Image 1 (cartoon, rainbow, N blue to C red):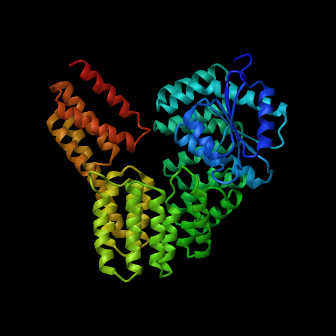
Image 2 (cartoon, helix red, strand yellow; image 1 turned 135 degrees about the vertical axis):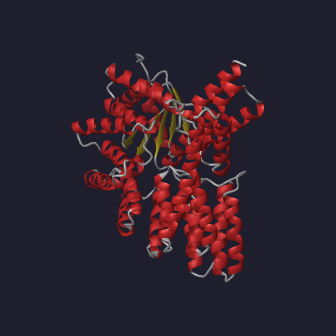
Image 3 (cartoon, rainbow, N blue to C red; image 1 turned 45 degrees about the vertical axis):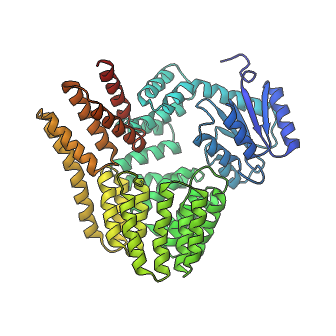
Length: 537
């Protein structure tokens, strides 16, 4: 640790009141800081963060008109303006539980309540800078998705007696989850809980239980957290999803309503509340939540389409399709991208029905299902599922069924998504038929994979490659299939020689798989194998 660590760090102070900005800058200088830049609002801070890297950002939560401190932090993380060793200190003037929850919502490194004393500020800053410096190697490895290296560094830090034991153990368990080592993650969480009832460890253990299919145990753990740690909002989100899986919509609605009362400034949670309220026929509650969510996203860098879709549906159900179209126009003006365009067109199906144009709605639904599953520019799994749900809700069962089968084939190993797919069928009274369709699509995916593995084990490289290529064609958005194809293709090239065509196909498969499964380390391993083959040519 440097003898005077604050002197060598660069600071950005974000505060909208000039007098307070001057006071806080003076405090920083007296604490030992020498390089302190200032910004008067969120937009100026965004420009400065984009142009220069800072070691420490000290930011007021309430920045007046425009984006607030939470939205600025979201944007800085999303765009990579702050690195693994950066410190973000949030400041708030209010001591209410709502404001404290809001200030901590996006997990800054720490937050302070005004008025701030020099001694308190210096103590906090020194502690945060020291902690970040000791954790920088782990954070950098995680940012690079080098999970094995990060795990090794966690073990080294624990052996070296790093004082941030709880944080290192939390990261260690998380890394085991990313590597699909769930028993090891469970062991870490259970060892932590033996020392005390920490909320994050209970939440992690609940995730382990969910992965194992033990919903009752996960439910009990999550309910314990909400009861014993009522400010730990991540548990509300996880519990809400589980209640949805179990069809407990009323309990889910009550839980989300409680969560937004604790912390009303989460656009995503407000949108989730609106969606559940709308499904439960609570139109006034849904409208309030969607309106609040849209307002909160006005200055956010995080895309949030759900409140626009929800308001569009409210307008259609009220017999105002033109108002729904205006809402979709607002959506496409605020956000771009193919998925947004597809979601807007799905709502147009609803608007056409509300306007009495049933034939037009059917034609558009058919086109939309084909566009969403287009191999050249397909929708994401979540978008395709959302579109299928909309088509189901509007009575376009054929297009919805086609799209749900596509989603299932490409995500046969995503149990949460498959449960949501099944619920889409259940909601229209097609539970049994839907279950058969989902099972058939899943069999198609797994059979194709098994054939490739069988042929490879028999030494039939050409047959294995052809089988996996067929699976890739049928499931172009299945990351596991793409990586398995790449692995078989690399084996063929190793034994039979490289071709430029097959090498290009492997690279394209790995690139798509990395987008679909960014946490899967196999993509990096396969790229290393490819580089080795190319180097040996």
